[in-house]
Amino acid sequence: MRRPAAAPAFVEPGDVAIGRGRDAGLARSRLRGVQATPRLGRWDGALGRPRPPACDHEGMQVNVKICGITRPDDARRAVDLGAWAIGLIFHPDSPRACPPEVAEEIGAELRREVTVTGVFVNRPLEDVVDLADRCSLSLLQLHGDEGPAYCREAARRTGARVIKAIPARDPAAVRRLSAFRTDYHLLDAYVPGQRGGTGKTFQWDYVRHHTRHVPLILSGGLNPDNVAEGITATRPFAVDSASGTEGPEPGRKDPAKVQALFRAVEQANTVEAA
Figure 1 (cartoon, rainbow, N blue to C red):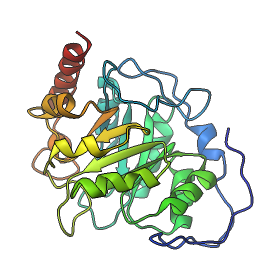
Figure 2 (cartoon, one colour; figure 1 turned 120 degrees about the vertical axis):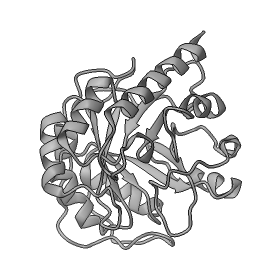
Figure 3 (cartoon, helix red, strand yellow; figure 1 turned 135 degrees about the vertical axis):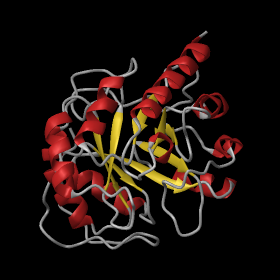
Figure 4 (cartoon, rainbow, N blue to C red; figure 1 turned 90 degrees about the horizontal axis):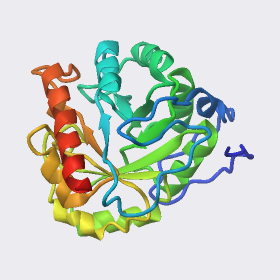
């Protein structure tokens, strides 16, 4: 278990400013985030488990993260279908923003069954710490301009693991991820002025510029029709779907699309293992 230490007062270039409030959270989220049930043949939970291997994931089963959850029923359905993680968005500008009281309900119910992920974009660190504790988050997805120091401090103060997400604008952007020694990296589509949930894919061959020293999550426009192709092209640790599993209204999942995505991933896993 990561031991809390005195909070350093610093901001690195490119970091979002780190607040100076109380050193809250600490390891509470870690203690509350244990998952008892393996998903898609892999393991998870924030305590008492090995980290995922830092390598290319060829020949290993690909996990599923369903993001943009705003309703407890959609969260439960994703878990029952075998999700490794669910994503609750705490970015007010997103049409898929999850109200904190709903996120709290989802986290309390499902924290022992799935990795409950909070998605943040340039939020003050105090907000991240408070929401991680309140909503039983065991994984933080930092989808803004947060720098390496912010990521380290978020992990230290919450006890949660961290995904650093970037838009894969070009190969150079992918290479810059090597500066982030987080638990996972996530590549999303680049659309000016938007932070995820665009329904757009990116050029998957950019993935070859990722070092693979950190497990990679593939995002950006994934749906039941293209997820298998994305898996074959990039061999990620996990795939992440938000808009590709929705109905007409953002934040409301289409049960048939969600089920079809899991079926497509399962088929892709079978092909990759053959």
